[in-house]
Amino acid sequence: MKTLFLSLLSICALVAAEPAKAPAEGRAGRLLEASGVKAEFLIKPDRHVALTFLDAAGKPMARGERSVVVKVDGKDLALEPKPEGFLSKEPLAAKEPAPIVVQVRTTADAKPTNFRLTLNTANCGGCKHQEYACSCDH
Ligand SMILES: [Zn+2]
Image 1: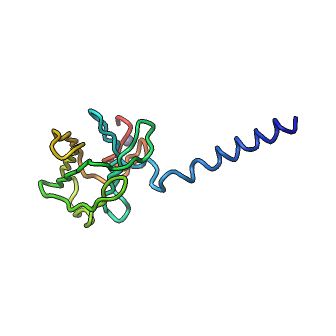
Image 2: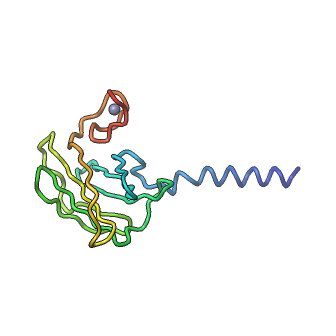
Image 3: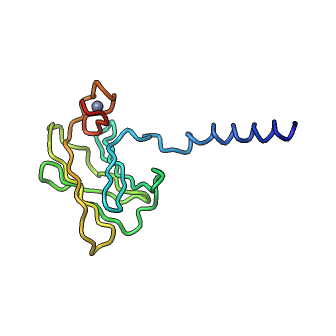
């Protein structure tokens, strides 16, 4: 009985420890998913963009050889490589809505996968996400 109690206790400890390991931003951003690419596009409160590559389970994974081009309103956004993705060097311009194109290449000579979204950081009343990351069909 004591052994069972102890193993239950350790399971609880494991479950409790899990959320702390997840990135602080959680999954507040827009999920980009197509042909072998899975990434989170997040506009931080300071309007810097963080692009994080995710594995099949939705956990951040190593960037590897992947490269990314982000165009906002037709202009390239300068990006800084990070171990698990990219971070913009500059905050986004204030103009909203604006078209955003995210182009992901898995290797330097691979065909790019394009994602289109709209820059809109207003809060959606339905899902509480910002509009660019809206997950409800309001
Ligand atoms: Zn919504």
